[in-house]
Figure 1 (cartoon, rainbow, N blue to C red):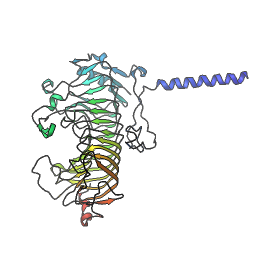
Figure 2 (figure 1 turned 90 degrees about the vertical axis):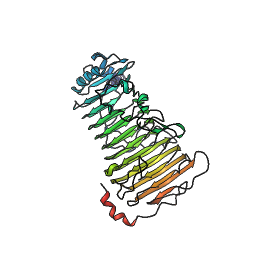
Figure 3 (figure 1 turned 120 degrees about the vertical axis):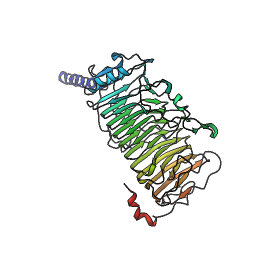
Figure 4 (figure 1 turned 30 degrees about the vertical axis):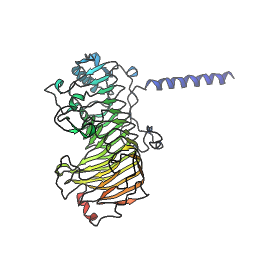
Length: 470
């Protein structure tokens, strides 16, 4: 009996030490593969699925970085470098000094602590750095308030830039405040105002956050709001994980796209809330292997691929999946938009389990996208093919038909698949006039409203379309 009791005590002590050590690494920064889990419930059952069923090979979300449990040698608190954090003082020098120090050590942390409001001017945080670098914002971080306060020597194209980095995380419990109001009011670009009126808007306004030529990035948990223009851009990147973000700006704030990616591959965007004055998520040319799940958009202009092919350019987008998402109170739902005269292709696009709530243009392919009134008809176009819409349900704004396929005169859209598409008017009578032009595909089930304009099979010219591919 004494031997058994002794063994039990030893086992209990060993287990206690194990769990104590496990809890001490919670604040450390690690990369790990996400475990595959079952698909989350459709959006009308749950708007916040826990993790994607088949995520792309992007870096996994690090454990929340708690500086209290990290080595003091790897945490670089900007206040120890002279940051004041009073919402008035320019703290740029302190942030750049902390960045330089953290960049030089493995798993370094640049910490903007809670209960402070930091102002920094347009800054490029450059690599290469040691792996595992974390930029952690637990307080408030913001740019100067409007164009009159913006230093004349600084770029007006962007505010925070992260350049040539690998295995870096941008995270925290804090807020990135864009101070966009005075930029939105600049009288150099018209945009829509209340009741169809035209109001002024930005021209040379900065994107809030830009990642450029970087890889294996994680952006998580932050609140990002009121950007002068795009909230977050990724250009020339590979391996991007975005998780649990809150992005917001007013419905009429112009050009305030939530997340924009271009020339970027292997991207996962998960479990985020985005409300803004332009595209919720926009996917530009040169993007592939993009997985979007558990995102709620609205108000916004929906989830867009494009615009593509501007100025007769080649544009290639492939392997994009959007699923288990909610789009509400938005000007568009799921949109592909291309200019006339472009080249290239949009292919391998899947929209699945999308809940619409009072959305105009719920499903739209527009190959006549034009920012002016006098765009000329051209013969070449980006080829749009292998596009599927499955389990798209909800309500639409009756000012526009809920389904609109306007494909090029010379390069038709091909292999469009519709299945379990059921869209009802938010108010008023059912519109039974979906629009199709030169669009080919099939309906696996009857749609609501009925769509009789989608042509079966493939056009006679389909064999020649390979010349327009990527």
